[in-house]
Length: 150
Image 1 (spheres, one colour):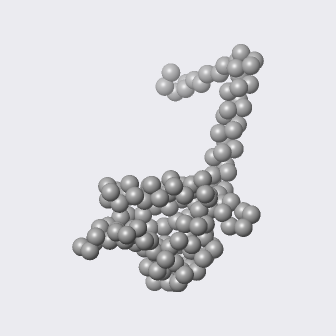
Image 2 (cartoon, one colour):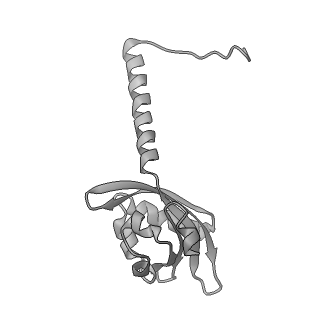
Image 3 (cartoon, one colour):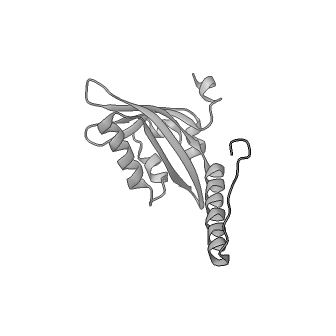
């Protein structure tokens, strides 16, 4: 399994949440070190090191998204920032939740580094805003035509 997991970008994992709020990663591929800077064995019984790596402004949103996924048993998806030293990175996670007979929630999923994609997205949005503002100031507009469809 580890050989297969090593070919997958980011980290594949099992995340578990107990009724008392405790969280852990019973399984995490070696990619967890590249994403969060922690070893898989460290978070196998206590996932707090992963949550400590989440940008402070994003922690509550991530926790809330996990809670919503648990309550609805709908797939979890969240984009958020990770802080490692002086560097901030963007990641995206998705997972499928399950509720077992003992009342424990488990998610099985993947988290990947999306920093380059997010930077491009933010740059594109900034360009769109700049263009819109320039058009407003110059009182210019634009239109598109499709000659094939009229």
